[in-house]
Length: 271
Image (cartoon, rainbow, N blue to C red; front, side, top):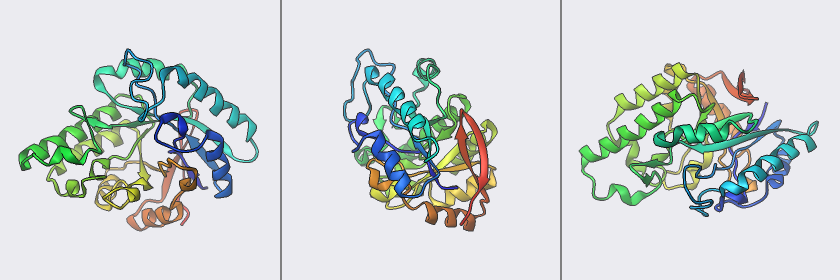
C-alpha cells in the first residue's frame, strides 16, 4: 500500500496548487491513499486571518472541509482521499482547538509543535545568542511540548518531531536525550503515531524527519510510524516513499499506520 498523509495547498498561503491538484498528483504517482492535511487556522486569535503566509483564515476552514469531502466522494474508486488537517499545538489554547476540530469528520489529525517560547522552530536566528545550557533548555521545552501534545488525546499523528533541526542542523547534537526518550515513551503510551516526513530534504539539515537515531529510539519504545511528504507543491506528493520504506525496514520496522475515520490500521511495510 502506498500513501501520503501530509500535504498542503494554496489556502495556507505558502504552498502551491489546489486540493484537486494534489489528488491528481497522487493518482499519477500510483498512490492508493492521499491525505489532505492543510494547516489549521489560528483558532484562538481574535482575528480571522492573523498569519496569511502561515495558515488559512478561520472563515476559510469550512470551505476547505467542504472541498476535501467533495473530492473524497468524486474520486472514490480511483483513489482513497482522506480528510485530514495539520493542527498547531498550543497548550494554553488546546480546548479551543479541540472544540473547533470536533466539528469536522476527519480521518486523522496531525498535531505539530511549530513554536517554542513564542518563536518558530524554523527560525535559525534563535540559536545565535544562546549558550549550551540555554540550547538544552529550548530542546527540552520542545520535547516537553511534543509529549504534552501526545497526552492531549487530540491527535492521531505527531508531525515532524525533530523539525527544529530544519534550519539548525546542530540541533541533533544538543544533549537532551532524557527529554527525547521521555517524549517517545509518552507517545507510545498515548497510542499516537509519528510520521517520517521527507520535507527535511528541502531545509538546511538536508534529510528526513526524524533522523535515524531518533527512529531507532522510537522503534525501541514501540512507537507506531506513518509517512508524509509534507508536500507544499503537487510535484512532491509521495516523495521518496519507496526509499523511506526500505530505510524503515533496515532499521527494524515491519509495519506502519494508515487512518480512516480517526481509526488506525497497521499495514505491512513493503520494501
